[in-house]
Amino acid sequence: MSLLQVRNISKSFGGVKAVDDVSFDLPAGQLLALLGPNGAGKSTCFNILNGQYRPDAGSVLFDGRRIDGMKPRDIWRLGVGRTFQISATFASMTALENVQMALISRERKLFQLWSPAASLYRDEAMVLLEQVGMAAQAERACGVLAYGDIKRVELAVALANRPRLLLMDEPTAGMAPQERNALMALTKKLVVERNLSVLFTEHSMDVVFTFADRMIVLARGQLIAEGDGDVIRNHPKVQEVYFGSGKTFEKQDISHAGKSI
Ligand SMILES: Nc1ncnc2c1ncn2[C@@H]1O[C@H](COP(=O)(O)OP(=O)(O)OP(=O)(O)O)[C@@H](O)[C@H]1O
Image (cartoon, rainbow, N blue to C red; front, side):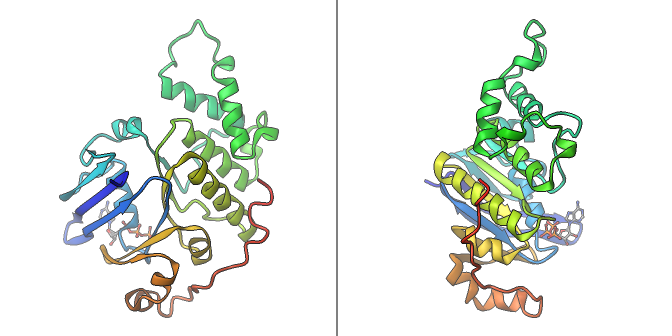
C-alpha cells in the first residue's frame, strides 16, 4: 500500500475546475514531481493534501487513513510536512534557533518555562543541521545567509517534525543551477536515507528529469500523464502542453551536483 493515495480529488473555484478528478499514488522512499504549466492546479492539489482546502469530491489517504478535510495542523502532526516558496525562517534568529523552535513546536514545549529555551533540543537541532550541510553556519542569523543556505535550513526545520511525507512547493525557485542541483541532491539523499516520500512542484525541467523518480503532469486540472522520465519526455499530451514553452526535456550533467553537501 502506498504511503499517499490520492483518489479522484476535485476542487472548483466558481466555474473553474482547478483540480479535476485527479488520482495518484506516492510510495515511501520516492521523489515524485508534480508538473504542469501555470494554472494547471498544482498549488490547489498541494493545498488539498495539507488540509488548507477540502476537496469537493474524492479522498486522500495517508498511511491508510483518510486525511481529506482534516485541519492542516492535524495533518502536520500525522507526519505531512510542507516547505514553501517564500522563506519560512525567522531572519533575526540563528539557523540553530530556527530548528530548535521547530523541535519545541513539535513537542509542544513552548510553555515549559523552567527549561531555558536556548538549551532545548540543541543537540537534535545540530544533528538536523549537519544532515543538511549547515552545521558550520548554525550560529549565523538566517537573515545573513545565502539563499541556498536558507533553503537548507528550511529543510532542517521541515525535518524537525519527522515527516514521512514532505510537500515541497518549488524548492529551487530563484536559485542558480549549481545551487538547485545541490539542494535536490540533498533532498534525494534524505529520501533514500529516511525512506521519506517527497512530492514537489518544479518549473525547471532539468531538475525534474535529473532527480525525480517519477512524474505526474497536470493540465487544466486534469492528470494527463504519469511515469518516469522517458515516458513523460515522449508523452504526446505532455509535448502538446509544453510545445512552444521553451522547456527542454534533456537530462543534464550533474557530475558537480551536491559537491557542497
Ligand atoms: N483561491 C482561488 N480562487 C479562485 N480561483 C483559484 C483559486 N486558487 C486557484 N484558482 C484557479 O484555479 C486554477 C489552478 O490554480 P493553481 O494555483 O492551483 O495552479 P498552479 O498549477 O499551481 O499554477 P502556478 O504554476 O501558476 O502556481 C487557476 O485557474 C487559478 O486561477
